[in-house]
Image (cartoon, rainbow, N blue to C red; front, side, top):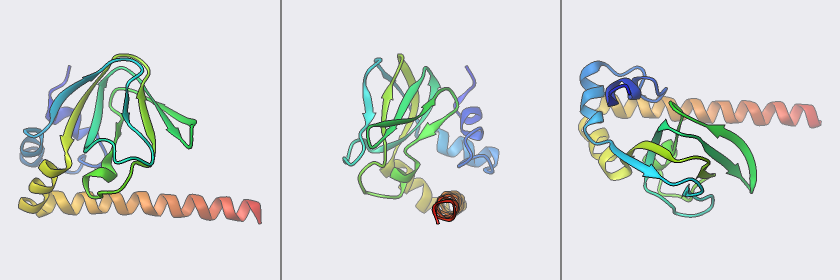
Length: 145
C-alpha cells in the first residue's frame, strides 16, 4: 500500500501541495477501519468530525435515501467537514470492510492556521465544488425551462 503522502497527493484537495506540505499534513491522518454495513457519516446529522480517504474497500453514498455513488480506494468524503460545523450532506456506508485515512477537523484547522498555503488550496478546492454545483443547477434549470 502506498504511504500516506502518496495517497494524499492523489486527492484533488491536496494534489498541488509540495512534498514538505504533504509530509506535514500526513502526520495528522489516522488509520480507521469499519465493518461492512457501518454508516461512517449520516446525512442531516452532526455525525463524524473528519475527512476520510478510502484505502481499501467500497462504500455507498446516499443522498435523501437514494444511492448516488459507490466509492472505493483513492476516493474521499467529508471535505466540507474540514471547514464547516454543519450537518452532513450525505450518508456514507461501508459496503465491504473499509479502511480509511482520517483527519479530524480540529487537527486540520490547526494545520491550516499554521500553513496558509494549505488553507488557500482548500479554499480553491471548495470554491471549485461550489462552481461545479452552480453550473450543474443552472444546466438542470435550463433543461426544465
